[in-house]
Each structure stands twice: as structure tokens, then as C-alpha cells.
Length: 464
Ligand code: BES
Ligand code: MN
Ligand code: MN
Image (cartoon, rainbow, N blue to C red; front, side, top):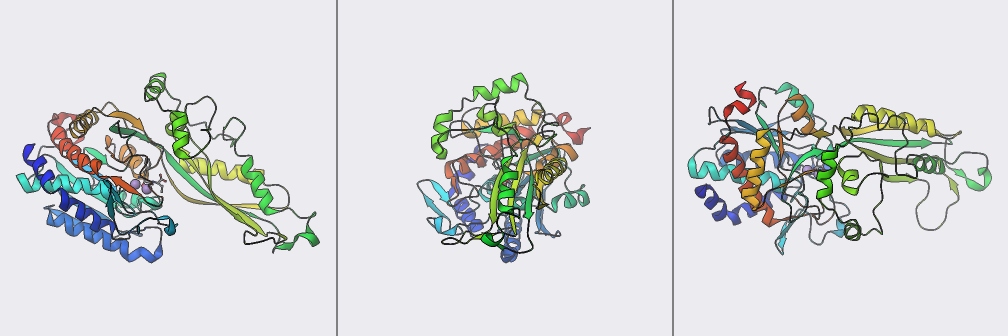
């Protein structure tokens, strides 16, 4: 491996410059104004992939933002890895809170600042660097590599399932590899084996045909803002449990072994509360904070509107009020089923005199990857070689909808080799990436191909 590692060391600065160039392209998938930037980013990646020696690299159109697909299949008999990531990024608002502009990357104290630095451009780039290192030094990779980098992850991958359905041969592989998650903390290199899913809803409470003077009419019409507050307040009980009937029916209980493993990670609730700027941690009774984060579903409100919120006072009964809310889901909850249950309950909670309209936004299925597969053990060894310490096996609270497709539909073992850290402000102003993990991550990926190639072929699907 010395040749490959030496290349990674030698090209250190160029890799950083190339990642910065990628961050400069404002590929915000949710904004129509950035449609062309998203496409530009896809083409930029394809140009790079061709340059570093992928045999095939293309921008493939979908009904939404394009997908980048690339492959190097020159290792007959060796396993095929499908690397998945995303080149789209979250919006940058509130812009005024950024210390330097989000699309003008900057390194300060070993941290690379910029939107997408860690989520997910930096982590996608680690894979490009590791592949280049093999191709440049040996002219070949130890495994066959397929790369699928999508442009719609941050908006819930609305067109990816259709893409997968129509390109199943293209995506056939033995193992999925995703670098898009944080590690437990700086002292715990980690491999992630579970992600929560998501069901996102928008609720609109409608009352009178137009806003009404609250003196003339107050007292005889239901107030939609108050009705919304009352509906939302009833969604959780005093024990932090979600009150939607049937909500927990499909939740897979934690095993004693898993509870013990999570307890061994020793989270410090007071320290964490302080870091987050809250007076105390809260949550569902009967579960530890890590269990609540990784293995229990949630319900949260993301935004609320209705009536007057300008300067001063205005006496009005608003015609309508609304909220955006979502549930993080755990196996075996299904986003469609949960969205239907929540929508039904919201309608049932509506007081007399208002009506409730619920719209489904995006969603994604939760997933647990089977831990026993040799590919995961190989990834454990690769992490240990890249980070100098054996990894902790963790779950995460966030969602990557495509992972459930990989595991459940394509039947692949999945390695979630993410090297972010929880403090990196993903989705928030001043997102950054700890550069030390950018470089260690490239090495870990390089070791992963080495470790996977060393496994007996009989361990993989293609051998069966
Ligand atoms: N990289 C994240 C997923 C993630 C975040 C996993 C934190 C584990 C911990 C991904 O880019 C993301 O933000 N996903 C969205 C999915 C949604 C838009 C369907 C999320 O989790 O909100
Ligand atoms: Mn991501
Ligand atoms: Mn994200």
C-alpha cells in the first residue's frame, strides 16, 4: 500500500484545491435559481472522473437533477463496490450568519469552511482521491468500482428509485459504500450500521374566508392559529411519547445486547446539553439519549406561520395557519404508513370551526445494515488502518433514503464509512470539515478496497 499512500500524501494540497473548486459550485438542489449550477456540478465531476482514469463517466438526466455515474471495471474476479454519495447541498440561509461566504471555501485552523464541505462534497471527494491514487500508481484498482453521485439527496431523492429501477444492471454490485455520516466523536472513529427514516408533512389549518377584525368577530369564530397550536400540543404526552394511534406499532424493539452496546458509548448528557446550548436534555421516558437519537422515532415541528408577526400589534383573526413537521422513523416503520397515521390524527384533532389540510412532502425509509457481513468486518479493519484505532459501531439519527434501497431492494451489504463529526454544522451556517479526517478518510477508503479484494470471492453475491 506504500505507493498508494505516498501518492495520497504527495497530492495532499491539490486534493484540497480540487475540493475547494467543487464547493465553489453552488449546487443547491432545492432552489430553482440554482438548477444550472447543479448541472454544472455534475459535469464538473464527470470531467474529473474521466481525467483520473474512470473507464466510463457520464451525466445521466432524470426528471429532476441529473445523476453522475462512473465505473472502473478492470478487476475481473474481484468484488464490485457501488459507492453512493450526493453532490447537491442544502440552502445557505441565513446568509448573514456566515463568517465567510458559503461558496468561497476557506481553511482556518485545519477546518475547511463552506457549504457542502463535509455534506457531502468532501466525503465524495475522498473516494475520488483514493481511486486516483490507485489508478495513478498501479494503473488499476484492487476492486471494481461503480460510482453513483446524485443531485437530489437533500430534497429526499425523489427520482432515484425510478433511476434505480431503470438501471438495475448498471448498478449491480456486491457491496454498497456510503460516506455521508458523522462519526461518534473525534476519539471514536466509527462505522455506522443504522439510519433513521423520515416522513415530512405540511399541515394547513383553515378558518374564515378572510382575516377578520378580532373585535368585531372575536368570540364566535375558531382561530386557526390557536387551533393549530392546540393540535400540535396534543401530539406528544407528558412522557415525551407521540400520541398518534399506531405510531409505534412497527418499531423494532432494542435488544439487550444493543442497549448494552449503546450504553458503553457513554454519552455525557450534561456536557452535551451545554454544547447544544440547552438547559437539559429531554425525550421519551424509558430510553437513554443515545437510544432516543438512534433507535426511537421522533416528531418535530420545523416551522410555523399564521396571522401577524410584523412590528407592533394588529388585531386580527387569521384566515389560516400552518406548520411543517416531520417524524424520524426507525425500522420497521414505513414513511407512507406513518404519514397516513399522522395525517389522520391531525384531522381528528381539529377543533370545530376549522378544517385541516395535510400535504405530504418527502420521506425515506429507515435502515439497519446487517452487521455480520465480512464486508463490514473488512471496513472495520480499513478504518483501523486509516484512523489508527478500531472503529465503534454506531447508528445515526439522520436519513439517507437510498441506503434502504441498497439494502432491501438490491440486497447489498452496506458500509457507512462516514468521517464527519457532529460539530461540523451540516445544514447550518459555517459548515466545515475537519481536514484531518478528509485525509484519514482517503486512506481508509484506499485500505477498504485492499481489504475487500482480500476477501474470498465466495463471500459476495456475484459469486453465487
Ligand atoms: N448526510 C445527511 C444524512 C445524515 C445526517 C446521516 C446526520 C446521519 C447523521 C444527508 O445529507 C441529509 O441531510 N439527509 C436528510 C434526508 C432528507 C432530506 C430526506 C436528512 O436527514 O434530513
Ligand atoms: Mn449528506
Ligand atoms: Mn444533508
